[in-house]
Length: 121
Image (tube, rainbow, N blue to C red; front, top):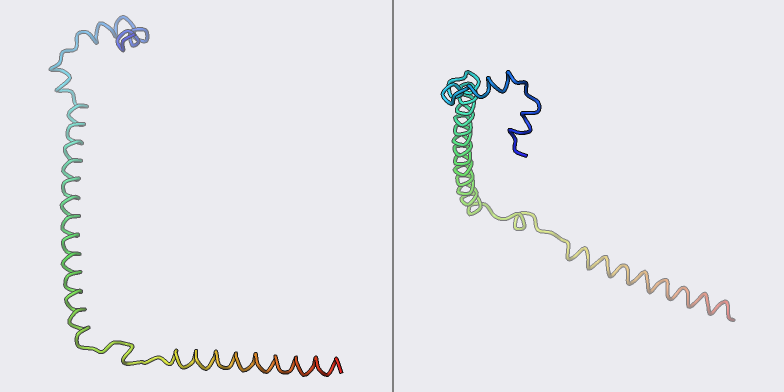
């Protein structure tokens, strides 16, 4: 069934007659359609304004990024690196740590051997 057949079940005879008499020109001039058109136009205008605003913000952010990169590049070439300013003793510390662990292991091994020899004898 088509839409008109379904709607005809829910309409009275008077509603059907009034609906048939409405011309296309009346629909175009109705205040509801004019309000919808104005809302649609204002919405499109707002969307265009927001899009333009977003593009401007993106351009400003890109310029700021470029400026910061240029400043960073200039600053990096003038200052020494952190590694040069504050050298680390990490390799020396780890060397001493592993040597200390090895000495402790040998001490425990020797003490266990002596204790075991004492227990057997």
